[in-house]
Image (cartoon, rainbow, N blue to C red; front, side, top):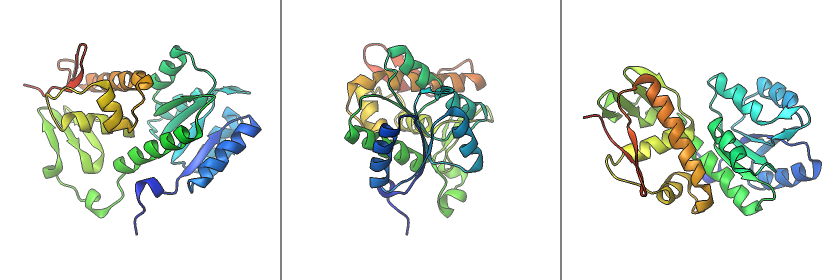
Length: 245
């Protein structure tokens, strides 16, 4: 029997050098039913990741041998879009923007609410589950399932996006956002609405998460099509998906 998204057991790599904090985080992740491995350095984390895949990486930034964000950079350069959640004391706005621009799925600063942390983990894993090919139906999905907008094609069941016949690799969050906006072309969504529908949070303090993800999506789409901007800003209101004419 397939597990529900919120109850799914995930294999999580926690990269944190503070023993007390790591123990606390491990307790709460295991309370949610997840399996947790731990690393204390960038080098150790990379070595563990080479040995086995993980469903989620929870990374501190200030590690003894470098910035945990380097792990995310290394994964993205290899076209590995495994979910990454940053958990760090570096709380400056530019630190958050840097993390989101690097392709992390979420960014939480210390000190943090345990309940919020658990909710963020559930949300990231839920988006991963929605975008993962887990059923025979998904494996046999046909072109009739596609959302087609001129040269842009979105295959929800296969988690595939192509533009001008070039496949575009998206993170789980980027794909969920694009699919959501494209499901109602021309409809304008505020940042709060997108946080609610895509990130499942009502905290307006994470508007930068929406902006950074929108910017990444635009850059990826522009690599294949510099003539049309599918995701458009409606100043003072929000964002909309505009199909090619």
